[in-house]
Each structure stands twice: as C-alpha cells, then as structure tokens.
Figure 1 (cartoon, rainbow, N blue to C red):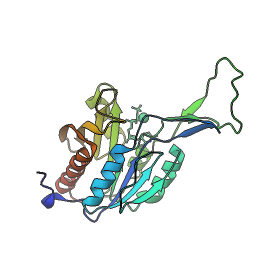
Figure 2: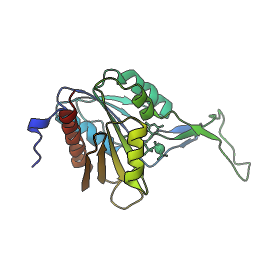
Figure 3: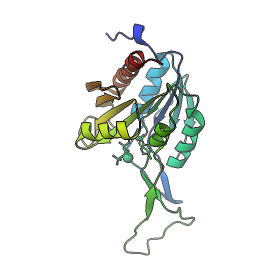
Figure 4: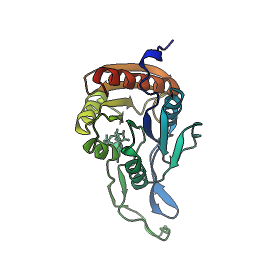
Length: 227
Ligand code: CTP
Ligand code: CA
C-alpha cells in the first residue's frame, strides 16, 4: 500500500491543474486540435482533491466529468487557457500543466465557412504562447511548477531539455504513439524527472494510480527542497 500519510504536502495547498486539448478555430465549421482526452489531468485533479488539496482544474474540451469538490474552469483555445491560467497562477502553490496545448493556431479565423472550391487548401499557422514557459519565467518564490512532455522518441533527453528550458521543478514524460499508454488510454507509463536530479520510472498503471505517484513525488520534492 502507498504510504502517503507522513508525506502529504498536497493537503491544504492551492493546486492548479490544466487538462485536455485546446481547439483552435479555422472557420465556423472547423478547428485544429490534438488527441488529448483529458484523462490524466482529471485523474490528477481527483487524486489531489482526495489528498485534501484545494484544486482548480482548467480544461480544454473533454468528455471527462470534473471531479467533485474541484473548482472547474472550461476553456477552448490556447489563448483562453493562457488567460485562465494567468488569472489563477499567483494564488497557486503547485501548478501541474498536463494539458496538451496546441502549439500552432491559424493566423486568422475565417468568419465564413471555407467552401470546397479549391483543389488544395493551405492554412497558415503561427505559434501559440507557451503557457508553461511563461509560468516558468514569472515563477514565484516557493511555487512548484510541474510540466508534462509527450515524446515519440528520445523521451528522457527531450524531457530533460524541457525541464531546464522552462525552469520547471518536475517533468512527467510519456512516450506517445504506443499501444496502451498516452492520449486516449486509461493507463499510462511515465518517467518523472526533477530539478534536483531525481528520476522515477512508473510502470504501466491506471491513470488515477499514476496521478497518486506524481503527487507523491511532488510531496517528496517539497520535503527535500522545503517550501
Ligand atoms: N505547453 C504549454 N503551452 C504550449 C505548449 C505546451 O503550456 N503552447 C506545455 C504543456 O502543457 C506541457 C509542456 O508544455 O506541460 C510540454 O508540452 P510538449 O508538447 O511535450 O512540448 P513542447 O514544449 O510544446 O515542445 P514540442 O511539442 O515541440 O515537443
Ligand atoms: Ca507541444
């Protein structure tokens, strides 16, 4: 059994969690998105709540049900998520960014539906703001910032790079593009890396169990580093 009793640093803290994909509108009929289901973020919210955390969940479009006792904010685009996160980040002790934010959005949203009169259609896209990197740049003293990394290859190397570049305390890396883990799956397998050079591999388990493992690592990190 998990021994969380002595190391529950989640209790009574303000915890901000983001989940799901974002949708970037192309025209009134179409949008650009990704395969995120929101399951990992909702599982984190549920687990953090049951450990006594004061949880705010900011989610892009997802079919998951917000857990009871969690303050829920629904958003659509990366820009919406950025604004919602910015307005809550100051009050947060721990921020966990499990959302799969769209990296690009159409440069313009068409007001009329694009008709199929062309044989080819190119949509020009521009980068969205990296919400996590913005949080890393404005991080408050003692605030714990946890990111995710979805990689198809060189998982550890790319995840370590994101941990450093975005000034994170912890990154949870998962390999995508495999059966039985990642986006739509009910289970996941992750590699947790911390700023203080701890590494923990969590083998394949239901996302709720992975969520407790991640929160347990956060508790231990807080105990080791103080705050
Ligand atoms: N992220 C974010 N805002 C974005 C893009 C990503 O906050 N516009 C966050 C995600 O929520 C996640 C982390 O950055 O916690 C890593 O996302 P990932 O897609 O793995 O990495 P990127 O930095 O976007 O780089 P790339 O997609 O090129 O691997
Ligand atoms: Ca990305």
